[in-house]
Structures are given as structure tokens and as C-alpha cells.
Image (cartoon, rainbow, N blue to C red; front, side):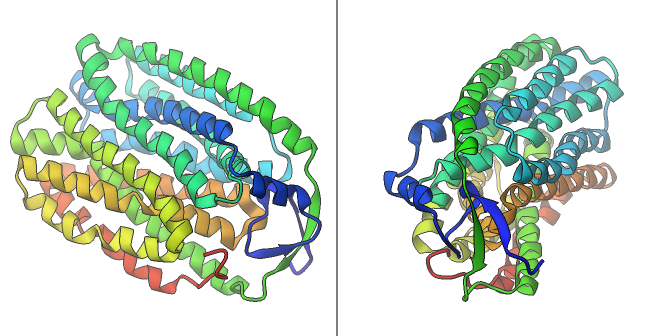
Length: 417
């Protein structure tokens, strides 16, 4: 591990000193490739719109097949665990050999997963369909994050936020589309959304054509660690802390995504469609917060944003279980805006800690941390069956307190932050 590491041009980051990188400098001067960023963000929007349909149709599946909360949590686990298991492996493989057209191919798994979910009549088939959608996510995220960084022009936090913005808005659209289409027309209408996957395949194929020449033209360079960079032990500790922080954020968001509808129905007696609109409000706030988090990290430092975004949500998460219906909506917006602003900063911070393993690190943080959130959702479902949904939200209210672990994050060189 003490040998010089050979990395491709697009994986280089500012915390290292690199020789002979004139092409990268030219790209930085030219600024971000906005068309590519817009395309990859829109693809993320389409991808996560389809994924969010799974959680949005939980009430339909629960009533149709008489599922309990533990079984609902297992559906979330089937989706999240597939992505968790495969994303780091995909990222590790593409670190060695980039695959420009893998995004379009992976999207085909989501296409077939939606078709299968629309006709599923057995619980096992529902789990398989969810796993197929998760497989599409596993292929999509590591390489698309690499493309976003390659097109960033040096504005890494901004590029990551643009990328995250598409996914966050896609996630927020699931409940709305479920309320407008799936609830009135039933489970079979999920098949209509496979057309979204078809559109995403076309866009991702075009992005692959842009990406392919970048791979062929790339150069390699030996990397020397910046003298102010943290040592390997501190890097390992920092990565564990970042995983814990992202886990706390993702588990809280997952608890609302999976069970907020049931919480509103049980506590306030609202209809399923009304509850889905409230869920959309929370997820839309998440999207807005995710966009602003990256540029703020570029401007003020990622560690500061991480501190504020996780711990700053704690007073509001503690108040949510005791609020009325409309106050809950207001609190969910505040929580979404604050807590989601940390995602881009956490991911870029991790990428800067280990710049020569960009795909694998992206896969770990998009996969493992989010997958752990899925596992937590299954555990929360089991807890809800033995207690109540309200009790689950009282427990989850303390999750942002894990943000105190940010004290163990190292100080990166000033220009990396």
C-alpha cells in the first residue's frame, strides 16, 4: 500500500499533488459541463422516481396481500440490500475498467423489476421485483457519480448537489404519482412507469457516448499524498464516522419514507392519498436541501455543513412525534431541508479522503450506508408490529444525535475542505 497509486484523470482531486495534468486543468478552467450534469441529474430523477414507487405503493400491497409491518420492511430490505451488496463491487470494478454503457444496461433491470411488480401476485415475487429495481440502482449510482465529478469543472460539491437534486426530486415524485395513478388504477398501473425506464435508457446511452472518449483519452499519473493530508489511520476512522453519519440521516429519512404514510393515517385518520401528499412535501424539502448542501460545502467547508445539517435537525425531530397534523407538515419541511443538506458534503468528503478509490468509495456510500438504512427500516417495521408507529418515531427522533461523531473528522487541506 506504500507504492505510488495509479489513477485515471477523472478520479484526481485537489488534496493530492499530481504531475502532468494539463487536461484536467483545462477542464477546470472551462467550468462544468452543464449539459452532461443536467443529463445525469435528470437520469437520476427518472431512476429514483421509479424506485420511490415501491415505498409509495406499500399501503396498496399491505391491504391487498394482508402484509404486516415486518413484511413491508422486508420489501424495503430486498431493494436496499441488493443495492448495498452490489454497489461497492460495481464501483471497485469500474475503478479498474470504466464501463460507459453500463448505466443504460443497468436501467434495464429497473425496467423489468417494475413490470414484474405490476403483475406480482405472491409476496416472494414482490421481493424479487424490489430486488431487481435495487440491482438497477447498484449499477447506476457509482458510475453516474463518477460522470458527475468528471463534468464538474472542479466544482465537486456543486456537481454532486446537482446530481443529488435529480434523485431527491425523483424520490419526492413517487408518492404523488402513486396518489394520482397507482391508487386509482391499481397495482397493474405500475407497468406504465416502465416507459420512464425506457426514456432513461436512451438518455444514459447518449451520456455513455460522451463518456467513452473521456475514457480513451485519459492519462495516468503517480499520486503523492498532500503533506497536510490525514494519515491512513485517521482516514479509516473518518470513513467509519462518515458511514455512521450517513446511516443516521438515511435511517431517519427511510423511517419517514417507509412509514410516514401509516403514521399519519393511524394518528390523524387522513386518507391514503392525503398522507401521500404530506410525504411528498417532506421529500420535496429533502430535494431542496440536498441541492444547497453541496455549494455550501464548497464555500464554507464540508465539515461545517455536516455538523450543522445533522445536529441542527435534532430539535425538530424531537418535536415531531408530539406535533399536530399541520405542525407535523411544517416540521417535516424544516427537517427535510436541514438533514438532507449533509448528503453531498459527506460523499465528497469521503471521495477526497480516498481519491484513488473513487468508484469503490462512491459505491460504499451510495450502497452500504443506504443499504444499512434499508436494514434499519426492516427492524423498525418489526418494532412497529410489537409496539406502535408512534413509538417508532419517538425512537427515531434521537437519530440526529449521532451527528456528535463529526468531532472525529479530520481537517483536510484548505483547498480540499
